Length: 87
Image 1: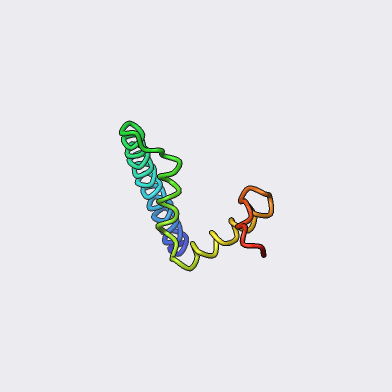
Image 2 (image 1 turned 120 degrees about the vertical axis):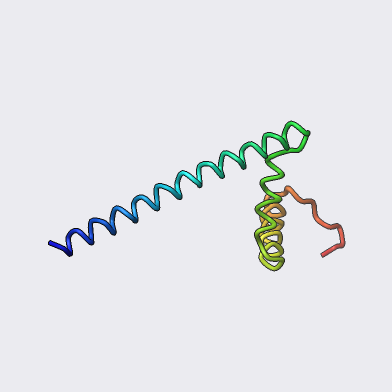
C-alpha cells in the first residue's frame, strides 16, 4: 500500500512538472510570436527571418551540404541556368 502511495505521488509530480513546463513553453511561444510581430511591423520579412533563425542553428558543413543538394535539385528542375562554361 505504501508503494502505491509513493507511485501515485511520483506520477502526480511528473504530471504536474510536465504541465508547468507546457505552460512555460506556451508563454515562450507567445513571446516569440510577439517578437516576430514586431519584426514584421518594422518591415522585416518574417518568413525569411524564420529561415535565418533555422540556418543559424546548423553548423557550416550541414548548411553547405543542404545548399549543394538544393542547388542540384533546382538545376535538375531547370530553375538554375547552366553556368555556360561548356561542361
